[in-house]
Amino acid sequence: MAGIPAQLPRLATIAMQTALGRHGVSVLVVPGDVLSADAENRGRPSDLVTAAATVVPPAEQVDRLAEAINDADTVALFAGAGVRGAHDRVMSLADRLHAPIGHALGGKEWIQFDNPYDVGMSGLLGYGAAYEATHEADLLILLGTDFPYDTFLPQDGRIAQIDRDPARIGRRAIVDIAVHGDVAATIDAVLPLLHQKPSRAFLDDMLRRHASALENVVDAYTHDIDHHTPIHPEYVAALIDEIADDDAVFTVDTGMCNVWAARYLSPNGRRRIIGSWRHGTMANALPHAIGAQSAFPGRQVISLSGDGGLAMLMGELLTVWRHRLPVKIVVFNNSTLGMVKLEMLVDGLPDFGTDQEPVNYADIAAAVGIPAIRVTDPGEVRGALTKAFAEPGPVLVDVVTDPNALSLPPKIDAAQVKGFALAAGKIVLAGGVGRMIDMARSNLRNIPRP
Image (cartoon, rainbow, N blue to C red; front, side):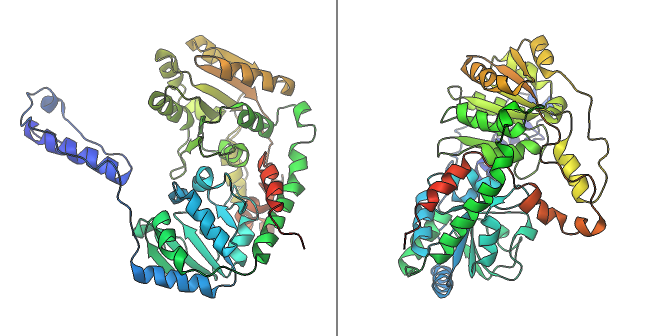
């Protein structure tokens, strides 16, 4: 907080440098009397560091990592957001080790595309064989991830962790080999020290399991889905993924929209998927979309909003209209707080207060001035999305979706509740994977034929 005008230049510099250096938010408080005073010390501005330095790991840590990798018969990789910019290096490492690659939600957009080693995602929203790969490998390497769900990480297996922030190393699982460095720089340093793994049996087994896991659930979420009423939210998400631009920016509300984004939005190296991955803040999608559209006015920005999230910050519709931001707002309107209900049931509590009275958000958007389409017939979803995405200005598409999608059994006893959080990620939430099944099938073709 600036107490006198003379402090402001230096405090402003500190605030900007802190935000840039820590990739976060700085708050500079300027009291009203200071703000109205004459400026002082208006000298030349201080130079700011706008690009982070590369963290190169110490040689002894690289040697220990190489020794652990060479000693392990099987290795699995698990990628987080820290693999951004290191896609090719991670592919090279996986090729040398014949290692399957799983990912956290934060790493999805940076590692899943053009990836013949992909075995899906772990965590409560997980799918595929990522859980099995990370638990059955002799050595698991965590790449730039602060994955918070420790129940989905191996408790007894051998783990190496690579991260540019040493404070993150070891705080989610017991780590045997700690490496302080950027993912790309660490792979560059360790790759020359690694032997080529002779067998790809472990990788091929995981690729087969991954494809099988997706095959076993995909039919339930695609059969007659375009005729089902209320509309399957999976169907809506799959069409959004299909129709959206190749460089679209998707913003995703916390809650069940996270599930649809994790399962149905296909990264390609050009798209962005933005959500409140760390804090789980509700109602984030529309504010994120406003920021993204303001920063990138030439790109298509699509907000995947839950009806609960939109209701909480509905005033932002006025912001969109007032600034004529061409954001496309797709509302998954199921009249329930689906993820809250899921969390209550996982904890063995009967859901309470999660179901809401139906609301017509298309009417609300139209009253604000935003063109809006309300969809209740699954046969009209494709046309509505295509029309909305082609409009030059903002549009809201209000899709009435099934509130029971991915819901839990109506009765679960105490024995079922125990460990249910883990089971939910592997079984109950294992359905619906969109175009990822095509990638899994394609990756099977990489398995050498006998």
